[in-house]
Length: 141
Image (cartoon, rainbow, N blue to C red; front, side):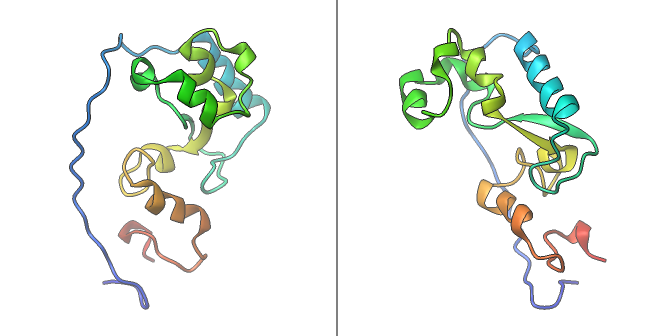
């Protein structure tokens, strides 16, 4: 049953994109350092819901799978706040604190909630929703 004053929209997304060829994914030393600093030193909560449970690190502006397809001059123009003097290779940006968001598992990878599962405008709604607004059927009381 749909909550009062809300309507449901069910959509099936089919995503068909290409990734540049890349080696198997591994955690760089910078990624481990960044994750440790954001989670254990700064104790950063989830960007969406402020929980500190099941925190994960999400690459925000660029992901590793896209590294070989990125025009780094465009990236420089789009992100002047990043300290480009530290940039020697893609991991310097990709695994930096500048490029990370801390998310709980639900808002990172969760069905109907995770940034890897929901289009960005819908995903952002979870940050700003009213306390009595039901975002998905799994939140109904």
